[in-house]
Amino acid sequence: MDVNEVKKEIMEKLELGELNSGVFYGEWAPVEGRDTLTSYSPIDGSPIAKVTMATKEDYEKVIKKAQESFEVWSDIPAPKRGWIVREIGNELRKYKRELGRLVSIEGGKTLTEGEGEVQEMIDIADFALGLSRQFYGLTIASEREHHRMYEQWLPIGPIGVITSFNFPCAVWAWNTMIASAAGDTSVWKPSSKGALVAIATMKIANRAVEGLGYPPIFFLVVGRGREVGEWMSTDTRLPLISFTGSIPTGKRIAENVAKRLGRTILELGGNNAAIVTPKADTTTALKGVAFRALATAGQRCTTTRRLILHESIYDDFLAKLKNIYEKVSIGNPLEKEVLMGPLIDEKAVENYLNAVKLAQEQGGKLIYGGERAKISGFENGHYVKPTIIEANPDMEIVKTETFAPILYVMKYRTIEEALEIHNNVPQGLSSAIFTTDLQEEEYFLSHRGSDCGIANVNTSTAGAEIGGAFGGEKETGGGRESGSDAWKAYMRRQTVTINYGKDLPLAQGVKFDI
Ligand code: UN1
Image (cartoon, rainbow, N blue to C red; front, side, top):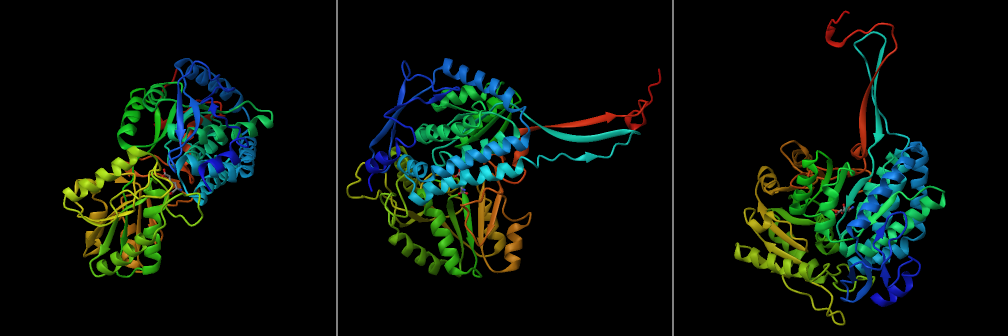
């Protein structure tokens, strides 16, 4: 299958043309008079279609409409909103194949990963439906006579969601399916490298909502990252900005939002490690490490970037891993047998090559890969070889997230040392240990263990389920999205005190008699 073939099959079904409006403010903004960007497929470098970018006037219209729509939407009882979100999930079910394929041709993911991404949206819509009956507040015993205290959770308004190219629609859904059930409307700034997926997703989602007779609740602003990011993060009309992306951009966004005392959910870089101990089941560990270091060509926030091996198994495990790397099929991700597709663009290839060079300059030893992969017939695609580098934990490059399939391998002697190495990076998203030893596992899960938001035992750093809270500590930004009680971030908590007595007793025994 080539890109053109897939494109022919899906574009019409997804209501996409050669030129598409990238702005939705209740209707699609006209394409005239606006700058455009071209979406290219990383598979073969071919242009897929063009998308218009928002002007400041467009943006103003988007915000106005998102506010108006919030007035209507937030009045609908939460379980009913949940039921509408379920319909969005159902509509996505109908387009799983087409949207999944678009994710593959625009983002370079394998077919199963592309469809998996749509499934992640469907799952979160189902989750939001259940949640819509469970926005529970606590009842609190009052110290005053004839007083009742409780807390309630209320919608907060239109929220801003800024997403990255690597999960061009699932991360949007993590935020917006929950936020919608919670009563918020949302404004989405997708990555310019995922603009077509964003437009197609918006069409599907809003169609489901409008089909039930409700106003659109999802809005879209495609544009230059820096510009739109600035508009949104400084805009007090967006009480919450959920941002997924790089640490430097996240810091800028956080600063802007903090200046106006708004809220953020930040999901920034990860530098995830897997520890493999002598007690590990080697087959599970090999699969876990290899798949999660290579899936999405190393372009997941959760990709395994560091491998910490016990000295007694080091040579053997590394040899086996190298063997897998040598056999991994790289190429057109639309072909079933391919496990690793391209990087997103040429800049990503340059970053990869640069990281390989720096790693060697800083004392690392190249074990495998480290160069472009030449795929015949796909010379304009952005393919690289999966890479293994023997490193030491103090190398600067090991502490940096490079969005590419580079795995730094390190040696440890004691479990304490393994965790020291593990935690010796500024990021704190995901982590894994492969062991069957209870003590090692419990040490990894103790307060001295993994300092990440996600800690996995005998399964890899990537591939989280939507039911858990997703996010991490340190420079990963501290935000939590998707499952568990992450919904609280999309609502405001109100502590309510009701006096149903005939007096006005004061708390803390304070007297004020008039
Ligand atoms: C991301 O890379 O930003 O856990 C999200 C995973 C996916 C989500 C990754 N479910 O790998």
